[in-house]
Image (cartoon, rainbow, N blue to C red):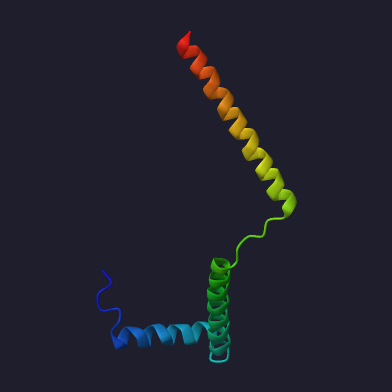
Length: 87
């Protein structure tokens, strides 16, 4: 279906259509905008991989309290389950 799209005649035709649509003055502006957009996208991806989410102490104590409460709940469930089996 797409065989031969990379041939020089097809590329010239596409470039001619782009030139007609946008004009000679607009093409460098579009290329510059596309380049800066790609650069910002790459920087955003690389910075999101490096950045660790910061957690405040209040959030950490909240999560710690929740984990302790869940551990107590699990222990209570195990105790009740053991009592039912032995009954």
